[in-house]
Image (cartoon, rainbow over all chains, first blue to last red; front, top):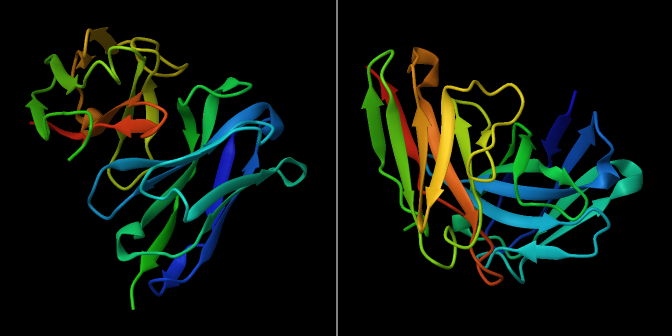
Length: 122
Length: 110
């Protein structure tokens, strides 16, 4: 059974940093691209970042580019999101998602974790 | 303002057929495939339809997707109370904006 468990969220002041983690199990982690998607309270879904199976290609949404960095450690079956210079508008539930297709990815979010909440406030 | 446009709400009675539209442009929907996600209240989203009209294993065939030009649609036939959820369309935008979602449609089963 595929399991994705996010952690690392919490309350942080504007301008500070936070690192999210996603522990994956139930599938061969290093075969699949992985993604982060967020959802502000009461709002819709927003794609944040994606990384290919071998970290060869990383993409970030325009709203976080230059502040957030996606990474992975295949030896630890883990996905990360380093978030710097946080803003109030980054407040959201952050989901980790597994890609549907083997290899470089298809941007189809097949499985989702339950999310970790990040609140940016002074 | 989302790049893909969905109606904010839709409704139907049990057994009815409802459709949810997703309108985009030549730079997203027309040139790429569309995926649909279902988010039940208080839960994480779930993949419902991918590549315009493909259902993942376990998704009932009451759910179907289609695409034409710059628009896509999700159809739900034989509506059930458990279908009450938020539905989101998604497609690749371009290399600058990446993956884009619709604003979501809240489906109410009357």
